[in-house]
Structure formats: C-alpha cells, structure tokens
Image (cartoon, rainbow, N blue to C red; front, side, top):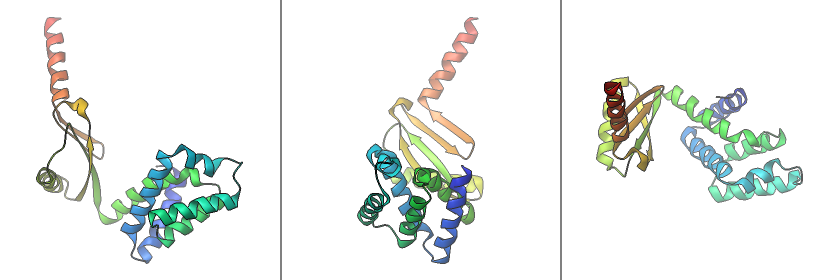
Length: 180
C-alpha cells in the first residue's frame, strides 16, 4: 500500500465514517479506480499537460454524474485534481478498501474458480472461512479456465490451491523425482 494512497484513503475513510457512507464511498471510489484503469484516454486526459484544469474539471464532473458519485468522492476528486494526484486514484481505492476492512474486522478472500459456481457454494465457503479465521469474510469472485477444474482461495498471505492444475503439477514433480 503506497504512503500517498494510504494518507488520502485514511482521510476519505474518516469523512465517510462521519457521514455514515463508508460502503457508498467504497463503491464509488472502486468504480472510479476501475474507470481509470480501463480507460487510457481518461488517464491521459487527467495527466496530459495539454488539458487545462477547466477541461479536467468538466471531465470529472461528467464521470461523477454518470457513476452517481457521492459528494464526498466528488470533493475528493477535486482535491486530487488540484494537487495533481489523480494518477494515485487506484492506490487510494485499494488503500481505502483495506482500511475499511481493517476497521470492520473483515478480511478479503480471493476465490478463483475454473468456471461458474453457484451461490450456495460461495455461501458455504464463506461460512467455512469465517469459522477458520474468526473474522467476517468478504469474497471476491474470479474465473480462470487455466485452472482446468477446482478452486484457488487466497486469504491474506495464505493460498489454498485445490485446482486440478496444481494436482497435475504435483504428479509431474513426483514422476520426475521418481525417475531420477
């Protein structure tokens, strides 16, 4: 987590908590960070000296309006623009999510599956992880066909790899060491 991202995220989180909008601000900041990440044109407009402050302000206003951004986040965008820190938005969003999770005692579990899984599976997995960690768990779902089958779950620094790809790799290593 970058120092700049953490500093701005902490200030934003404190404002959001004061106004009881922690989750709304989280959704807004994640949506903005996603827009920045996906659009080279938007990133360019915010960092290219060819664009003046009025043009940047107009672009940010349109983006905020389109995304339905809260006033707290709109004001934060203005501060970031004035301080030429819009490029730090993804780091700020990441830090905000982590800090908000820490405050609520929640941990993130990245769950990567080979294909789509039913909601019942994720509910059971969430319950199991909550019992194992003693904390509230938030699941981020991903898919990766390269797993072939199975699930890879990452909770903090721990990775639980139950994929067929991992099992095949283990078998390959055993066979190679047996031949030697």
